[in-house]
Image (cartoon, rainbow, N blue to C red; front, side, top):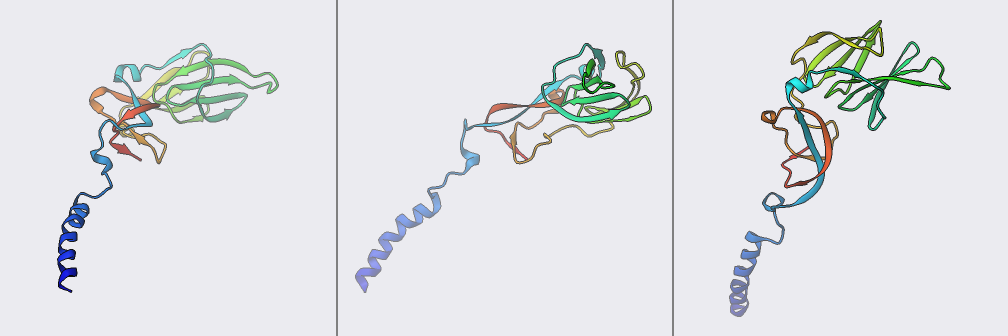
Length: 180
């Protein structure tokens, strides 16, 4: 019995060492860990608040679609709204693209389209779809976009000192600190 007790004492030191320093590494201590995640794309407030009607653009990352009269309004996530004449559904015609940095959503009443323009709410006159104009802007109607809409994703933490987040892009990130 005495022999087993001495053996137990000798074994307890290495086991204590393993218990303290274990085989699992804390992920927070791993450095230069590369993962696929989302990185914010920034713009200055002046760039974000510039809304322009441009020539039709190709659809790359479409979001919500709004139908009003004979028109389709198709959101290009984070970039703006495509306006399509759909009065003849067999032959839709792209009319214009309204550049609205940071835009994700829209609503329309009569000839006024309400859009989010990153942190601002903007009312646009869409009576002439080839020449959309700003009617009114409510500054800072929305909170700073500090995280992406997607969930269960790692991302680079947003930094308001770099500007306003207008969209999130997929990228290889080193040691991302944020997760949603």
